[in-house]
Amino acid sequence: EAGVAQSPRYKIIEKRQSVAFWCNPISGHATLYWYQQILGQGPKLLIQFQNNGVVDDSQLPKDRFSAERLKGVDSTLKIQPAKLEDSAVYLCASRQTGKVWSPLHFGNGTRLTVT
Amino acid sequence: RKEVEQDPGPFNVPEGATVAFNCTYSNSASQSFFWYRQDCRKEPKLLMSVYSSGNEDGRFTAQLNRASQYISLLIRDSKLSDSATYLCVVSKGGDTGFQKLVFGTGTRLLVSP
Image 1: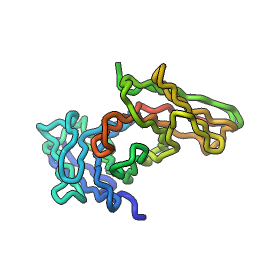
Image 2 (image 1 turned 120 degrees about the vertical axis):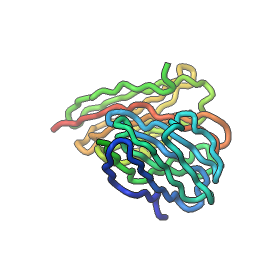
Image 3 (image 1 turned 60 degrees about the vertical axis):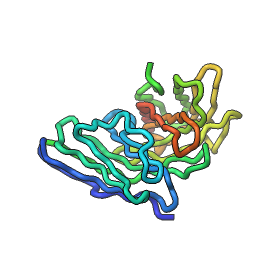
């Protein structure tokens, strides 16, 4: 089966600019996650979707970050305006719904550098 | 207290050694547990799930202790290729669509010749 697709792989922007990331999950996976991983830390959940609805966005900095999954398939994550501390790898993951032991499947991630 | 805690390491071991990592979690209602492996500049990949009865996959053994709220990973006969960061993942919530999966900070393992 095809894995989770993410783009772009790398992005360098200046602070206060905007950026968007795209993710296409594994076919049939209703649950989609965006994680932020800062160097030396574990992934931190930003937002979780179940189909096109938001399940958890408690750690999403809503003043600058937004995400959508309009048709319940692919998703975009946007940062506007970016800050230096947003430099991180943004990981998208998907998971099969209905099985407690279903693992997360990650995309390759987008490495964002804010200068 | 953090939801999921791990010793960040690094653990430096020689080839052939046995090494064990622990991970503690704070939510007693957590339902599923996983160990992920992350190589440098790569995405995390599932190493193994951690079942209540414990499970083994080759040189890797995972255990769950619900009473003390920790999971462990044992690696026997370490190989150079085992060098990586090992992430503990704990879920909480009901239906998998609504389960929150929380990662620890990871434990770095360095296996030397």
